[in-house]
Length: 254
Image (cartoon, rainbow, N blue to C red; front, side, top):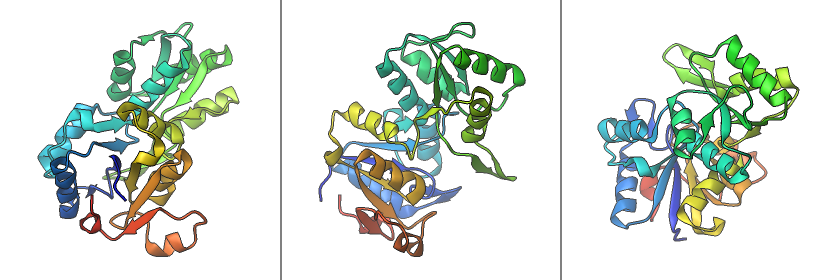
């Protein structure tokens, strides 16, 4: 099957932590040589596309440009723009999220925002939670960047965006609309960016629960690569299988 665009996960697919995956850099090179459009997708909303691209280029032997990076922050800003609720937003999050919102023309407002966007914030405070809660209870749209409850660092599994969002959900008694994987919104936004329909692209990833389910939920074909989280034994138990399964990206013909 020849696809017109590829959406590709990062950790576990293009690299493992700080470990390079040589087959992954060769895969990216093949896509570039064939001039096939691609986006690397990440639920990380703390970093800008420039930072993500620079990391891949400097540390993982992949010549990635910022325009090849699509974060949950970019997807959130795009989705919010499409909702057309107004341009006033209150955001809990880091630079990656705030820059994405500014780039889409949003203005930050902590008094009467049209929407509240909550993501991972290294310096989250009670005051931020209070402002978000009151705005949502007053009718502001409640958006969560991604549901990841934890993320790994050198000390272990620490709270992720989903944990921050959960507190606001509890305080407001409302569930956020989630954007990042495995929700379909992120892939729908990525398809829109390329002007493609869902049958023209494929989602590539190592984690069935996030990457592959994102594709399934969006009606996009999926390619599961066994270089990271999910194992063949895991996939034997799932009801909906990935469209394709491979052991490493060298096996895939673009």
